Image (cartoon, rainbow, N blue to C red; front, side, top):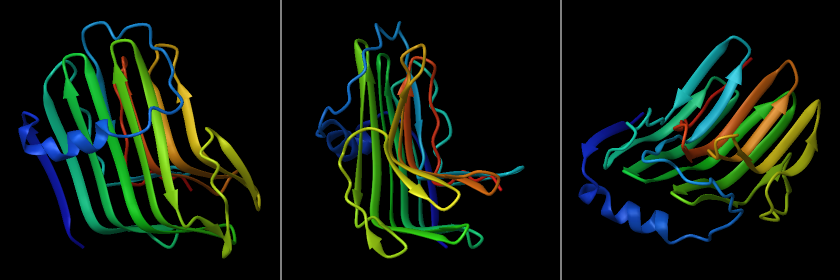
Length: 216
């Protein structure tokens, strides 16, 4: 399994990524009321929690607040046992003194929990926080549950019932300090597993994200 993590001062080396992050729909904006003088953010690619055990794939770690820097991580493939697997895992977060851009993505998602199979061709989330607000968006292609195609509305917090739990699509939440968190997919089966796919966070209190965080 190929795996790459980069820690690079300055945003020149990730200029192409900056352009990609800035040219995306400003969906679901939430006003932050100012980020003071620092913003922190991180990104990941799959996340889930497995009751007592936590696994993280393609996570950038935390970007130091108030610095112009970039962190990234990638892996050709990744899996957590038979629970979840993906390909081309990618995560990047880019910081400025008063702004943070975060993005996470993966392809060929295969999630199997409590007899329910969830798949997608491509999953991505993006979060942007600036001095006067924050926004987030998710892009999901080819989503299916037990082989049945699922229409993605693009609305925040679209909910689909699954056996013993729920799948939340484009899950978005804003903390009391205005920090934006977006999870492209969040599967919850009570007492069995909690899996977040493609998570990005940006805001005043910092952020974090992973390719996989699981609890079982």
